[in-house]
Length: 213
Ligand SMILES: [Zn+2]
Image 1: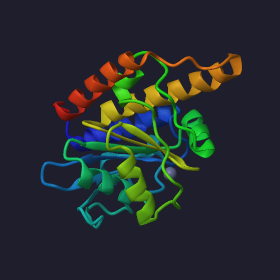
Image 2 (image 1 turned 60 degrees about the vertical axis):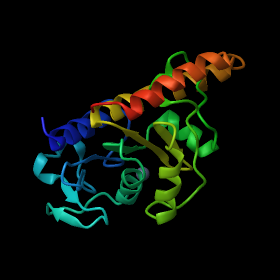
Image 3 (image 1 turned 90 degrees about the vertical axis):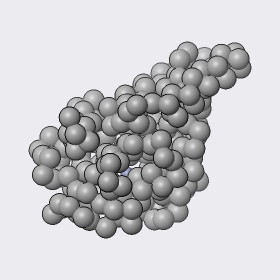
Image 4 (image 1 turned 180 degrees about the vertical axis):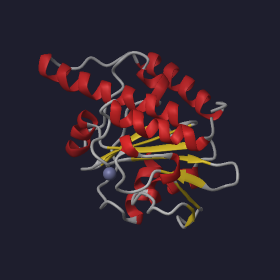
């Protein structure tokens, strides 16, 4: 499987799993030659083929493909520029995580093992308009120590070593957001012991910097 196959598979699974709707969101991967493969703008995921994927350079210019690359490519590129260990980026609009993004409320790491996958609480960026350089910078800065961040009033950005892992992590975050939303209706949240989360976070940090993809 090439990175192109992996990006396409993750994009289709993202829709199938209900982690985004319509043509929203986008998936990308880092290529060995320093370029990036990214899903195109406005193509339904269930109809998307390998030929629809677009290859862009560090500046976001198209080097391969005929379609328009995702309008949020700057978010992806800002993450790759900052973090050598990141090989895939997913931007999505999952319902429960987006509820937290609109409330500007972090998703707390209160579910056991959550921090292994995500690195801790999922933080929320400051608001910046979609497609602006500010959004890209805020998003990339927010995933310095964690795998997923909330984009204020918008959705999520997830970074990982492969498209499949990024998608899995996004699923973990969305499920946690749903559970925590419900838990708050049932009662108040109980935090995990500090030492539990710091141990789990150290696993995340180790895996992030020592993963084969
Ligand atoms: Zn978006």
